[in-house]
Amino acid sequence: MKSIFTICLVMFMTFGLSYGQSPRLVLSEEFTGETCGPCATNNPGYNSIMEGFAGQVISLKYQNNIPSSGPNFYTYNTGDISSRTSYYANSYSPHAFIDGNFWNGNAGAVTASQFTTRTAVTSPFEITATHSFSAAYDSIFAHIVIRATAASSIATLKARVAISERNVYGYTSPNGESDYAHVMRKLLPTAAGTSLPATMAVGDSMVFDVQWKILVSTNPAVSLPLWPMLEVIAWVQNDGNKEILQAGHSPAMIAIDPAMVSMSGVTTVSCLDSIAPSVTITNNEPTPATSIDFEYSLDGLTPMVYSWTGTLNQGATAIVSIPPIAMATGPHALNVKITNVNGTPDLISTNNMVAKPAGRPTAAVTTFTENFVSTTWPPVNWLNENPGGLTTTGWSRATAGVATTGSAKMNFYSTPASANVRNNTLYPLSPLDLSTVTGSLYLTFSVAHQRYSASYTDRLDVIVSTNCGATWTTAYTKSGANLATVAAFGTAAFTPSSTQWRTDAVDLAAYIGNPNVLIAFKGVSGYGNNAYVDNINLSTSPVGIQEHPNMNFGFDVLPNPVTADNGTILISLKKNANVRVEVLDIMGHLVSQASQVMLSKGEHSQPLNLQGLANGLYLVRLNVDGEQLTRRVVLQQ
Image (cartoon, rainbow, N blue to C red):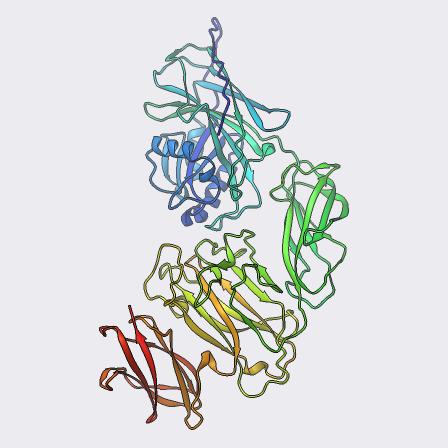
């Protein structure tokens, strides 16, 4: 980053004037973060209290790296955030400091009484702050005047200036927070501030100017500051005891901001040949919106324009119906965007668009398989619905796979658990034609998952629709320990090895005879750890189990080779039965035996315990009501 500073510190000595102490603008600094769960819980109440002191309290937020670096704000300006962290010896989030040393503690413990008490204390200074921009709006210029309204003799006074972003719209962070206000973007001239005279008489004034070339990050995931939302906060601080004696504020210039709230009227998967979306809009700013132009399109093609007229006051909402858009079969991306408001371009781009995937099913198929070997994502005729809107969350393609390169990865590790982004769904748009199927039918797939901890529970569902996506039924659901294929918890982002997969099956018997069956894979985030899906197939037996024609059961062991703690026995029973698992060495000697259990008719999975056994070849024998079948397995660590 290259910043330009012009500091012009002028001290005016004024005699014969009489001043009193000045009303105080309280500065409330907070250390918070995009990955901080308690921050998302406590910040709404903290923000609400400050909003009740408009004109008396100004907020400044340092988005830090506690408990870890977020994808946006800390990355944008690590240096200044780290400097203020060290200045206050801050070690946790959310941590609020009111006027430096007047009060500090968990932001969730802040009460209105603390601000009431502090705002009643007059200040020996008054601060006037103004700002402007270059013609290209790529530089901001701040003009600060600090005037002594009472005599002062403090050797450690500093003047500090922050460029902050009043509101950051359209972004939801990993902790689920989407309300970002007064985000610190740059400290001028540096975080150290500018020294002020040790002795000042009543009427002495200090004037200085600073400017900043707005940093453009090379990281496309980083949210860049928007010039209409930039504000200037200046303050005088005693570095000896960290007390802030006065603050000044130059507000952001934006006066009108119609924003997209949501889209409705669009079913994610539908057999209709057109879609007619409606968008809900609101006005965040005081100037009424009387005309708004919308651009709308499918798949980034030449947009069409719809013009709306009416009156949209601050805080009001309106529902706007967009004309129908023709939709061919296959997956599509629908976008609706505000371009102009009251005849001029919309200055805030981060909250002026809503996007939604939409798909129309293709012709039905009788066979189905997907192993994600192709690098095309999503696969051909698949639709990916990630409400988070980022490629770093929700479903994506991973290079890890069972036997080949590639799988579908549900990024529970980075996807928030908040309601508006936690459900992420992969839709194959080729329906299954099961009209001629007889006997049994299963959807089989390999899955891998490791839990972050017992406190974070992720879920994988397989959902089915027989009415072209209008309604869906859950045919398979596993979560927590039942979904996990690794026993131990893992706090690093999980990538499976070849031995950390399990094969699961979904019984499709209820849908046999139906010519149009849609399936989908739905990940429900608990902000835990990643899950992977691979080798999706249709099978006439669950997970490849071959039932013996003269027996009432069949079974298999997965994976094979197996490790001591990740084996699973998959059992298919034609009737209720007593089941016992036995492990024998290659000579036929019994080396391990599980207790006999009663299992009902249907499909079951049981853990295979090979702890304490040496690597090599073993026989797994299943005893079902006296009948026996044996499978060979290779144990390797």
